[in-house]
Image 1 (spheres, rainbow, N blue to C red):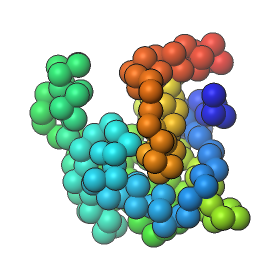
Image 2 (image 1 turned 120 degrees about the vertical axis):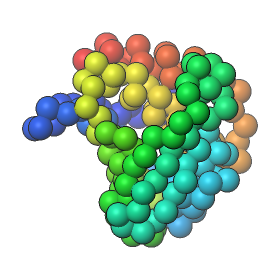
Image 3 (image 1 turned 90 degrees about the vertical axis):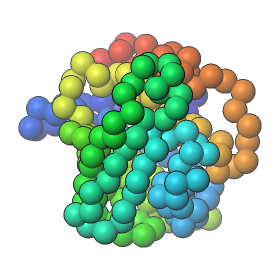
Image 4 (image 1 turned 180 degrees about the vertical axis):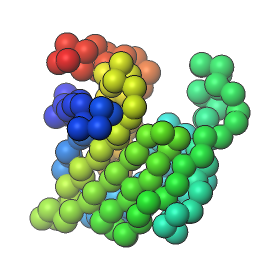
Length: 167
C-alpha cells in the first residue's frame, strides 16, 4: 500500500484530506496528467472536466459514464472556479463546495506532489480519502505505463475502511 493520506478537521470546521506522494516523473509530466482532458481520462479522474486555467474561470465537472451507470448520477455538471494555475507548480480550483489544491515540487529526477481536498461533510472524509488514495495509485500507474489489475471501486471501498479505522 502506498503511504496513507490524512483526514483532519480545519479551523473553519471543514475537512481536509491530504496526500503527499513522490513521483518518478517531472513536474511537467504530472502537470499534464492533471490538466489535459485525455490524461485525466487515462487515470480515471472522477469527472469529465471542462478546465480553463485562467484565474476566476468557471469550470464544469460532468459525471463520467461509469458514474451515471453505477450510481444513477444525473448528467448535469457541477460548476467550479479556477483559483490559481501556475504551471507546473500549483493548481487550485473549486469543484462545487470542495477545494482541490495540487502542489508540485521538483524532487531529484522526479517530483513531489502534495494534494489537498477540502470538503464540508466530515462524515464523507473516509470515503473521499479512500477514493483519492485509489485515484492517486491509478495516476501513478498511468504515468508509468503500468496496467492496473484491480477494481478501483473495490480498492476505494477497502481503503475507506482503513480511513474509518484511523478516525
